[in-house]
Length: 263
Ligand code: IPE
Ligand code: IPE
Ligand code: MG
Image (tube, rainbow, N blue to C red):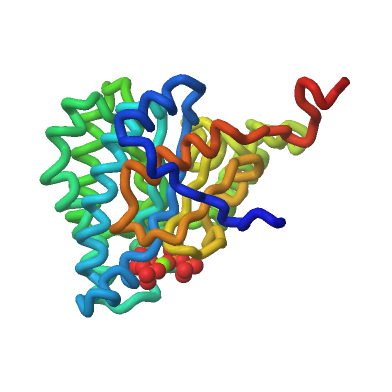
């Protein structure tokens, strides 16, 4: 029989604490990236406005940030707003731009206490000033923290990121700082917005959609993918830890062979 492609059966027998210690017995993924999807559908199911789903989703971000920092994840990137999300109604966009402000207003003290460093990727120069201000303040206040990096992808699009990287590289070539021969994979990686982060080991997408929606196309080349039907506001520590445990059982080959397979 074929295994369900989404094959993410939860191990309901384990408590959260048991799952955590299970995860920490093996190497925890250094960088986990999440496409947080399904807020609108969560609200619709309850006959609520879409923004109610976004508000509830913010609580999930807090839960998962705590959990990731407790099991020793080094970086957690959360896709909060894509370059395509500007197509949504103005009211919804305004609400989404307000969310980082509310999130940081209510959560920054705990992030500081947990030694979390806040960072962002995406073109933040066009975000409303209140959004930029909240993010800059949070980044400034937490810049010396050495624990989890909580990285918000805000007005982020992988293609936009690549265009900006190509332009920056071409400028450097034109100015004689780089030669065309020096443009290799490492050079491109170094010009992306994620240059300071390791490549994601694990990508989680909620809501049953099985696509990347312009997220980290270069960086995800060898990332392990994990999909769930759960809507983001329903997503929780148990599901997050199940994703980590599923990752830990995988055999990452990077195109080669491993251990026994080479014999
Ligand atoms: C994810 O939830 C949040 C953002 C994309 C900003 P959605 O708003 O996409 O929710 P659905 O996919 O419509 O249910
Ligand atoms: C991806 O979700 C973007 C974020 C989670 C911020 P979308 O809901 O925008 O993606 P599509 O439109 O379903 O591909
Ligand atoms: Mg969506």
